[in-house]
Length: 192
Ligand code: GRF
Image (cartoon, rainbow, N blue to C red; front, side, top):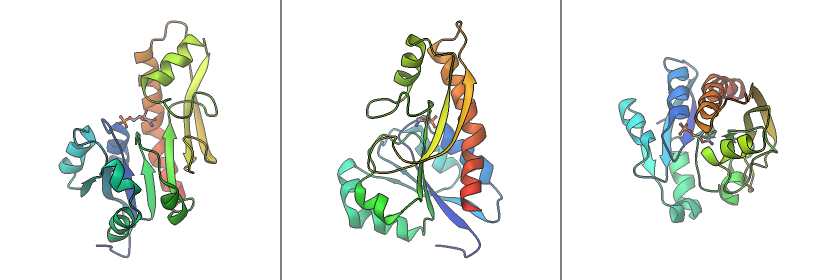
């Protein structure tokens, strides 16, 4: 399964998968790093089509399976995963997985943590709260994953302005732009 020349990334995603797509595009043709596996808990997630289109193996995992240590670790070992990249993955990463992959699981959050993080703070909810609090800036946080939602050590943060004329949609677009630009590069730095 593993060619000795490549580091292997597993992307965990629950939704549309635009970050997964950006990461796949970034590493296409890379001789040292490749996306080797996509894992989702949602059988209708857009990321499944992205996996198929890019001929990347994917696995649909139930919340119960994610809690089964052996099932998940076997899967990750089979694909010899070096780094687990969460990109819109909505299930909490269990403690055994954090332990098995120390500093090898990262997440992207669509706000400047510690603001607007934690359980339930995802998707448009984050941007709606940023808007209603009249923030003048928001951004993204790339961070290591520990057993608590959005509380691991930060790797990098990137900012954008929030204008009075912004809506949830325009903030979503600005934040996605930052994510697509920076997440692949930060992953590359970590694996180089
Ligand atoms: C991103 O905004 C990411 O920050 C958050 O979930 C969203 C996933 O979007 N964790 P996509 O599925 O990659 O388009």
